[in-house]
Image (cartoon, rainbow, N blue to C red; front, top):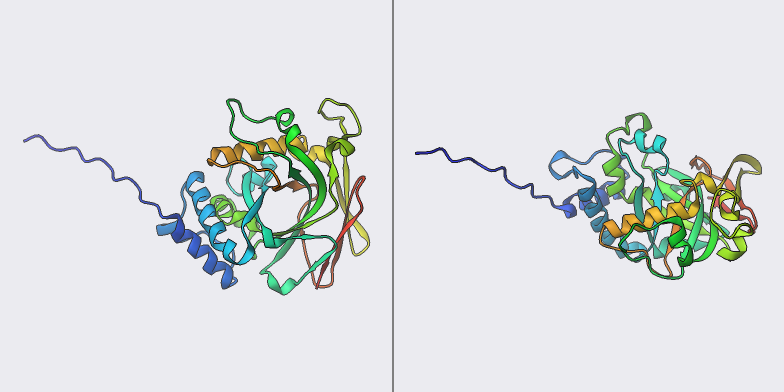
Length: 284
């Protein structure tokens, strides 16, 4: 009798199991860590499925997903967590508030704050025959605004993050909210060449951050993947790769102009994006 060749069994992965583990880890204020091996996502595709389940569970308390964010927009940050691309994550309706605002430090395991350019979409960015580009997404930009992102790294140990990139992706890139400033039409922000590039107003727009009245950092729009609209194009393509799309009315935050800052009790952050009224966040 000829021996029968055995074919490997397909891996049965349950994204909801890891999503429930994440919900429990957040509830118990556990330090950010890899999921148990039996339920751990092994690929970016599996981690995206976990994120989708986690966002659905979180929506019960934080409202539906109404926007998107980019994390790890630089190769240095990607390398730190063992990935080779940025990460897309979702924003929840009840966690988006208008500036000025304050947040309670004790509500987080460890709060970090980032300073971003936000875009409100005026039309859907559905999948098309060619990938989206900075030029192709321009007409979908309804408004631009300054934003402050709130995130909870759950006391992540950064020197040990080299193998935890998929956990970060699954954990919705740590997002816990957005403080949104005044919105302005893209045409008012460009104020320069009609052709997008390094010299247009959105690429050159300056952002400065102050903590308790002292300057702590600055950046320009071109720091966001070369151009904020290039970052938006990447986000649109990432959503399309998941079988989704960025939709009209959704808010997209495109990465921080300044390195993340750990918040302390009684801190007051002020973000000045060129051409916009400053926005402030108080830590109580």
